[in-house]
Length: 341
Ligand code: CP
Ligand code: NVA
Image 1: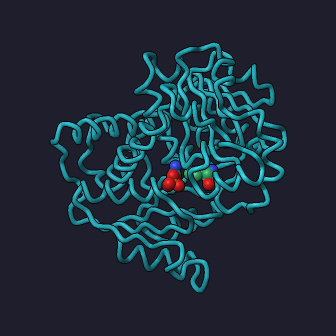
Image 2: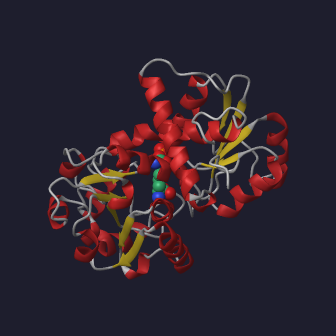
């Protein structure tokens, strides 16, 4: 029997078996309850963790820092501008150095190969805090949030992602959703489909989990009966600003607004977004999209974002509990948090 404890590294969603994923969610829920009841045990005392970030972050960085702090450990945040990594020093050398100093490394970067190289050379656990291809800690929070907001088990629920489906968040949702046995639907223009190998791998996973995978440009087919709608920014970090000009006409039909909510036919449908979201003009980019393209909010309308359908801030909070679970399952292996691991 394989261990319920996940592998030490978390680089992409399919690193976990279905049982390990279930276990990780169970650990996160347990930690959330411990914290809410004021009885959180500190399990990272004496541990030091490096947060090596090549891209900006609010939630992922904050979740790692708060999780480490609450668990009694220490961390160093290395921001996109202040280290040598990738500029004057290779990933390999950086990994070896950080591995000598720290007990674990959280990495956010561009090429997925980079986080794989880090894991190969560091000699300590490495957790992917987002690359261009995968965002596995996000998907853990997404699943926990959907589980909390549903009366039925996840394998009886349908989630539909709308938007730029080649992005990290869509890839991770597709894979993790398939792994847990959900009905995962992706609605996107043909030009913005996930790569074929990711779709095929998710299909194979779904075939063993009892899940279902659908990728289509037929919005009605994808959203009808969905329990959850999910979207992400139309232009991701690392892509040029000019991409907005071609993305807007392609993706405007996939925006989650009140009409899209109605199209599900499910009055109780919930809306997810990994955040940050462009839903109004109250950010520099939101303002520029309004003045440049007449777009008042992009992937999600402000009224839906602020409506009772939206569970985006519960989702953001769950980054903390799930990231805590990831670190503890990697670093605290001799003392499992739940029975049976
Ligand atoms: N969802 C997410 O990863 O947010 P940050 O970019 O703020 O970390
Ligand atoms: N797809 C987005 C996710 C941000 C959390 C990006 O990579 O910018």
